Each structure stands twice: as structure tokens, then as C-alpha cells.
Length: 345
Ligand code: 8NA
Ligand code: MG
Ligand code: MG
Image (cartoon, rainbow, N blue to C red; front, top):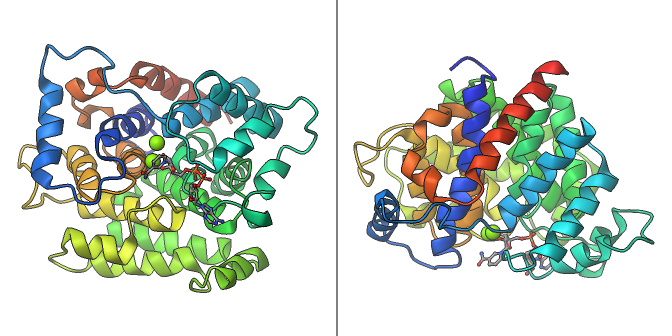
């Protein structure tokens, strides 16, 4: 499709929900044989399965808040977004939130709170969370703002409402940038796509906060840049095992161990792969491959789904998958609204 077409918006938002819902089956599993992944995905074709049988988790619950806030306010409003996160959590606390972020969400519901960024700053003795909870809900920022500087700025601020460690919010910036570029058709040239991400993250990670956090956590000086270089190295290899991907990039709940991984899943699955069915679309390959990595499967599949969906568009997602997942209809409607907001600004 054309750059920033409606199909790409729908693909991004719907595939993110699908990734979250189908990924829930394997969340936290250490080893996931591809056979089990394909069995799970094949079972979604069963007509007797109920609509929306696979429930979404925290990833989609929070992304829905981001979308509603951006649409209602016509842009980024931190007070409104924080209120929506708190309300969503209080109404449905059982969506599988990270154990730390729950404290932030409880504090955000206090009417006395004046600085909505304060609860996140208090996490982990003032160091803030480096979890992937900011990144898992970052895609909508790329669908609301056409300007790349806005995407970076607001994805960062939106993540900081719960994740004040640079290794948390910079993961959200990277995820939003990947969706932004994919929406423009940048995945047509995978080498340039990864180079652009590295160039952008060089700037994003060039500040004092990143340097400090990286030193304290004993990571490379620019942690996401270093991981993106590993993604590029893995891309250039003709054969890569699942074990190597996990050991080089990770599959965990830290943004650093999951956002570059999600990006790799998309890049690796641009071509047909031996371990995946021949009749699969690139988007189906991306989701299946993400699940086979194990670990934080719902979040990695959700993030990879958003990037891949923005590339392939809505038609690459099987109807049976869409039907089985809770929240896909809302995502489709909201994608159209975001498409309008994006093109009016
Ligand atoms: P979070 O902010 O609570 O962070 C997630 C976890 O990361 C925390 O519980 C800590 O263990 C750890 N962590 C983060 N920052 C620090 C730090 N500075 N020092 C020490 N430990 C730290 O939650 P989130 O919103 O980032 O959520 C991340 C993931 O957890 C999501 O994938 C979400 O789905 C959830 N989750 C994951 C699993 C799983 O098995 N993979 C299970 C349930 C929930
Ligand atoms: Mg989740
Ligand atoms: Mg998760």
C-alpha cells in the first residue's frame, strides 16, 4: 500500500492486539517448540471457537488508553492519559500487569496528585522501571503524529508516566520509531531501515540520563544502539537459530531485552523461512516466530505485530485470528480515527 495508507494503520493496531492475545498462551514459557506455536495458531481456524475467546492483557489495555487519550484530546495530554491508565487498572486489575507498575497505577488514581510523573520516578529507589511496559503501548504515538520529532517526544513522555528509567522510556521511543518508519514503507529496504533506527537512537541515547543509567546497570554506553548493531549482524547471517536470537537479543520483560528482539522478528520474517509454513503471509510468520522465542511472548508479539502490521497492512492478518481476539473490532475502528487525526495535523 501507499505510505501512511488506512490499511497500514489498521494493520498496525489490529496486529498489535492479535500479537498480545495469541501470545498470552506462551507468556513466561522457557522453551516453545515451533510445533506448539503452529498448533495453537491452527486452532484459531476452528469455526466452533467463540468470538474474542482469547483475552487481551495489560499491553492492549494500556494501548487502548493511549489511543483514547490521543483521540479525545487531539494530541498528547499527560494528565488525561495518566487518569485513563489508573481508571483502566482499577476497573480490570487482572490483565497481567508487571508487579512493580501496579504501585504506580494505584498512585495515579489519587485526586491529590499534582505531578503525574512523580509515582514513576519513585520506583526502584528512584531509578525507575526499565520494563517493556512503556514500549508495549508506544505504537499509537506513531499513528497519531506524522512528524518524527513529535513521535519521539510524545512516545517518551507517554512512557515516563510509568517508566522513568532511560532503559524503559528509550525502548518506547525505539518501538514508536520502528512503527513510524514502517508506516512510511521503510521496510521495503531493510538495511536502510535498521540504519535509520541506529542513527536516530544515536541521538536519543546521547544524553546524560542515558549515560548514567547505562553505567549503573553495567550496559553499553548506548544500550539500544548496541543491540541494534546486533540485530544488523544477525540479519546479515543466512542461518540463525532461535537459541542465538535469545542469547544475543533476549526475550525478557526489560525493554532492552524485548524491543530490539521484536524488530529482529519483523526483519527476519520479511522472507519465507524453512521453519514456517509456506502459505503464511509475512505477518503470520512474524507473529509465529515471536511466539517461538518464548519469554515475554505476548509483549514481543504485540510490538512485532504493530511494526509488521504497519508494513503489510490489514489484509495480511487472517480473519480467523482477528475473530478470536478480544478488542480487534475496537482497534480497527480506532485505527480509522487515528488515520484521520494523522492526516489532518
Ligand atoms: P514493571 O514496571 O513492573 O516492570 C516489570 C519487571 O521488571 C518488574 O516487576 C521488575 O521485576 C523488573 N524491573 C523493572 N525495572 C527495574 C529496576 N529498575 N530494577 C530492578 N527490577 C526492575 O512492569 P511493565 O509494565 O514494564 O511490564 C513488563 C512486562 O511485565 C510486560 O510484558 C507485562 O506483560 C508484564 N508481565 C510479564 C510476564 C512474563 O512472564 N513475561 C508475566 C506477567 C506480567
Ligand atoms: Mg501482557
Ligand atoms: Mg508481557
